[in-house]
Image (cartoon, rainbow, N blue to C red; front, side, top):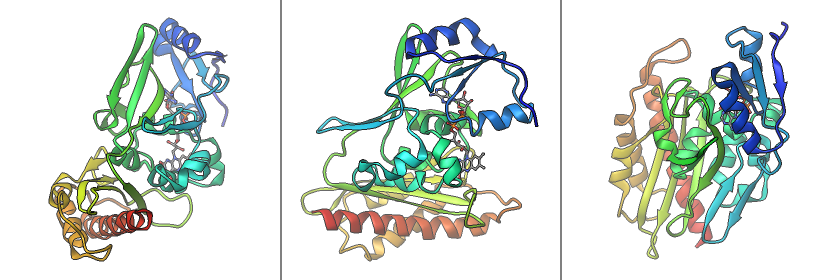
Length: 296
Ligand SMILES: Cc1cc2nc3c(=O)[nH]c(=O)nc-3n(C[C@H](O)[C@H](O)[C@H](O)COP(=O)(O)OP(=O)(O)OC[C@H]3O[C@@H](n4cnc5c(N)ncnc54)[C@H](O)[C@@H]3O)c2cc1C
């Protein structure tokens, strides 16, 4: 399958990239890892006159933590990098687990976090981890930038709040308000190159007495956009589990089922997905709490 014809631009700064986007508008498309864009070009779903690569811009492909100030992630950080870099065993563990479940090694070496967010697939492996980490997205245009919580970004399958002339220039993860840990699980219908039937990310922050200050739970592939399980989160707030096997987590997981509206399709029935939500939510909460207990 041949690619359609287009002009290729490779700016060396975000400023230059924003100016090109401003000039070409709807005739242009940004290119990051290309795992989505090139498929769409080959299938003739898109035919931009200009393809603007972000790959020559320095410093967009790394994550860095500043003590007490959170973590800043560049939009070109690949899934492979996020799964394995030094933050993957620490505050970014839940995101690293999501990144490690994307496609195959080949895809993970190309697929970027920015491309994943902007593509807005309901079954994305990175969206639920970013929701439970409370990520903020920095969207940059020619005349300035704005900050948007990731929760407000997704509008439907493939639809987001990004404007045509904006670039997702950073992803910011705020510092948790106390000891915290997260976990991510996905279940698909096969072991490799699987698309989630359901995926769940959880993140728990505790107080000095190990009671739950805040729990965040996000469910993917069960609605047009990834959703927070707010009933379950509310149920857990203020409770003090007696270890990771406390029945509280299973009760919260049952509540999470009410927060989703899964559909029946060729990959699984709504009832099967509801059962998966309950199981995966309980396991991610147990795992997150057990990680906290090992740290404190
Ligand atoms: C075989 C295969 C398996 C896959 N498996 C999975 C999977 O298991 N889980 C999963 O979540 N995804 C999966 N994907 C989807 C895909 O790999 C991800 O969505 C990927 O992260 C997209 O990133 P990219 O860098 O390749 O984006 P690109 O293809 O370069 O870009 C995608 C879109 O985002 C826009 N864009 C990119 N970067 C920016 C930016 N910084 N600012 C604004 N717009 C931007 C582009 O213009 C384009 O419209 C799979 C894809 C393939 C082909």
